[in-house]
Image (cartoon, rainbow, N blue to C red; front, side):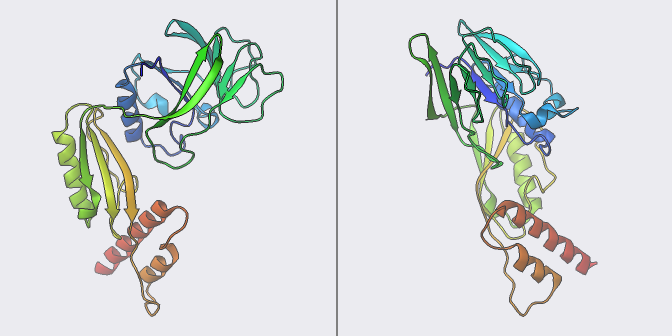
Length: 279
């Protein structure tokens, strides 16, 4: 499939907590795209004085739209307009406008935007749903938006396989402590070629701390480390055990929401308590 461009309508990361290493990884991936990438900040990032995107210098093929900016960009011989979340009401110059403004939309051209309450006067709105809302992960999924004079705007969900470099795999389940995991991660990064991907998956043991709770980042920004398909294994504590560590285990273990955060908080807490006991 010959794609013209990729557009990110906000939500590229959680601007309040994203790590600089994640920004570096996103830059490397977007830089490897064989077409232009247009990125709009979401409303949360638009209000930050020092947004994460300013941590790195972006390649010319990655076009960031300012929070209050309206810009017309030619893609594939057609002019498209892009409006940031703080842009004023506008009459866009272009065949289609992409925006994540919550309310003030142009009324003279078709619009591509995330779902929200829309004014009835809008000519045509194509709503594209969030792909990975609040998961902290990613999937090889996108929405293909097409526009023609006769059929107007159309969208379809697609799965894609973007081959960027060579994949390397690490089974996190073979590691019982973070030191050995870091050693394997550092070795894999050192042995990688530019744009290789290191895919880390498997069982996360009861006492294993992984990023972002673990303070580790690759020493190179041209290698992407992907954490996916992780299964978190919790420790157990008998009802008769009345230690502080056992109390933490009973409080944080088990199925339910925020499994990854609870697991990592428990691993850090138990490790800290054991360190205090040893001293």
